[in-house]
Amino acid sequence: MEPITVIYLIYIFIGFYFLFLFTLIYIQNRKDLYYCPKPKKNYSLSIVIPCYNEGATIERTIKSVLEAGYDNLKKVIVVDDCSKDNSYEIIKSLEKKYSKVMAVQTPKNTGNAAGSKNYGAKFVDTELIGFSDGDSFIEKGAINKLVGFFNDEKVGSVTCSVLVENKKKFIERVQAVEYKVIKFSRKLLEFVDSIYVTPGPLGIFRKSAFDEIKGFDESNLTEDIEITWHLQSKGYKVKMALPARAFTVAPSTLKDWIKQRNRWNIGGLQTSVKYGKDWFRKGMLGKFILPFFVLSWVVGLFGLAVLLYRILRILFLKLVSTTYSIQTQTSLVRFEDITLMPNVLVFFGLIMFFLSLWFTLLSLFYMKDENRKGENFPVLSFYMIFYVMVYPIILISSFYKFLRGHRKW
Amino acid sequence: MVKFLENRKRVFWEALLLTVVVFLFGLLIGIVYESSKSSDMNEYYSVSELSLMDIFALNSLVNVDSEDCLILTESNLDFADRIYEEAKTLAKYEAAGKITKEIEIVHKRYDVLRTFLWINTIKTSEKCEKDYSTVVYLYEYSSDDLTKKAEQNVWSKILSDFKEQEGGGILLIPIAADSNLTSLDSLISKFKITEYPVVIIDEKYVIKDLSSVEELEKYLS
Image 1 (tube, rainbow over the protein chains, first blue to last red):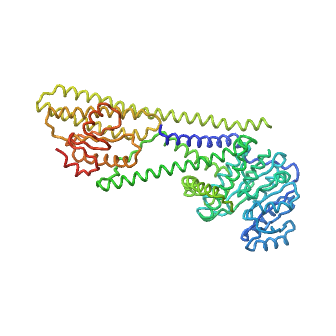
Image 2 (image 1 turned 120 degrees about the vertical axis):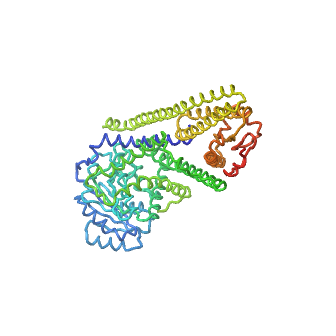
Image 3 (image 1 turned 90 degrees about the vertical axis):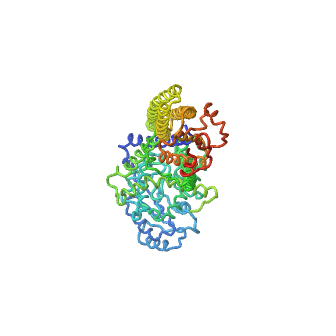
């Protein structure tokens, strides 16, 4: 067997494994997907909203928290990280209008969301502490669906479904599809205690656990991933309330998208390095989350390297062949050469594609009450064929930046 | 509760088991599929082998008689055309063969057959007057050199066009020179070839550089 065939088969095996894993978790737990426990007590809660140049959205964000309908919401602490726009004026005006809103400002710009979040957390004395981004909007009733999970004292944090708010541009629609697949996968991972992130749009933490781990790591670009791993390493569980939803503004340009993904990837690498010592230790963090992260990096980068090598070889072969064919005035392309001769690798690839398609469609359509505006066939096709394949290219730039010590938002 | 969670985590092993089963099943189907293709080729080969034996027998019986020579020449040409077509089918099957090496073995057997054919045409030309040209194309089957692959790719197209143009005027025999066949190596040694691909026309001309159909025509007898 040729080395390239062996590599292809290894990739097929890994792909099949994860598809079957998610499928089996879904089959075994589908009745519990929507389950949100009823709170045994009326947990007191404060929400911290970091804000940096969010003048366009911050008012709506604050109002969405206030109107979410959680009756024991004590404070909404909005932390302005020395914005250059009018964010702080808006927050101050809302502070006057709503008694629960508290406007604070960091002494100087912290340079990342973690700094603002930790700053805001100093003003919190409730049993639970929640965080929401300045460009995210919480659906009414969402908080109530999250708090019941804290009945289990081992639960350190609870997250919700994060969906895309803006779906006008093509790139936004593709991300809307992606976010739905991610949220579905994340819920499935909850059943094996392997949620790896409590995303920024809405995450609620047990305050005692939050204090125990000393809050967010301000040196990490993805503080929401790091804190989740930190909690897991301390033996806390992370849960997800699938029916609870928060909406976020996704990047609208390719440049912003690349910037965001670079940040996510670099943060993921930082976190992997930080917890690298926990391989096969500390429960599911060491047994699944960490190996899963590292494997996805290795598979992505190595796969891309092999693909590029193959493409370059083919291009070189075509170029030289064309040069020779011109010299000898011979046509290279013949109708008789176009034949369909399937092989086992093609069969495997097709099965893989259709299984992935099935999983994507399941992620998109199993919730009947969701807004599917803009998630049409071209968007879905683009997501399935190009978006997923383009992603490893971002991994290269992220890896390069990580090695160069890039740690800026 | 702990036991319940442990049961849930059993899913990692269940997924692995399912993957192994599906993967092995897929590989098995692949092997069966590839074997069916190589058995198709083996059938073709058996028929071709039989035809060659027949031609050999005919060759040993032939007297210097114009009628016998005509039959022998036609048999050689027909046989060459048939295995040339079979070679095209074989190339397609080879492209699809990813798991087993069976097709590669069939390829080697065909190379032996083609070498026999070349020997036979040389013998035939000793007895009978030839009204066609023998064009032997020697290439490297397992070369990783991309420039060489490109050159071979273009050579095969040129020779395909050449054959189409000349029809029965040429007897085209493509042989993989790196098949490690003693008979072939011995046959080639007299041409002092150091590098492939090359085209040998009527055992007289050894063409090393890529040439157009028009240029090749000049070498025909």
